[in-house]
Image (cartoon, rainbow, N blue to C red; front, side, top):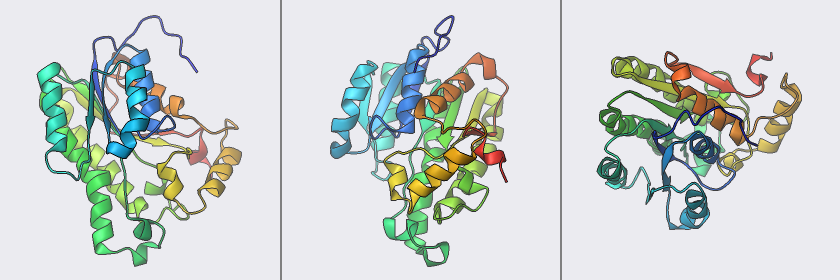
Length: 260
């Protein structure tokens, strides 16, 4: 899928993309879209196991920064931003596409979620975005855009989404408060809510295939979205064409969320 554009409107912009696991990742669709519109990319990978999947993707978009990032590992997040400051001196786009909950807490009901599991899910899936924003903001000297990934289960009850519903609700509220605090710096913050997509992360949800099929049947456009639909929307929001759009939860789901 390719987008015909009159010019690379993100030329010379610097983008950090966090959360690529493989070529099916939403974050990869975003990275490809930023690249197609002219941005330079910094790409991270979770660990050595993930590196073999992500490295060829980073090479295909000529990413000059490719580093490990486990937000739970002390110092790794700071190291990524130190490298960005050293090489580029600035940052224009931040994309946070990571989430985690222990399997036993994710696949059980909310009543059965442990305090430890809830805290871990909140730290990785939500508070890490705050930590990234804190480090990114000083580098966004001429303004910028920050994105994180949410899901409709934050606003409505979705079967088997369980603990991630409250976690994503907190993440959406976080975006609104960050949009307010960072607005004077011309930094815009977006919560992106894609429809169901078959990614590695979605494999942890019970009966996800049923959710996927139902969404495809209910979507007003008659089909599911893909990672490039999400990517191109984020790329648009990072351009001057969306210079006064901030603090919203942006649905990219073929209209599924409007259906009763």
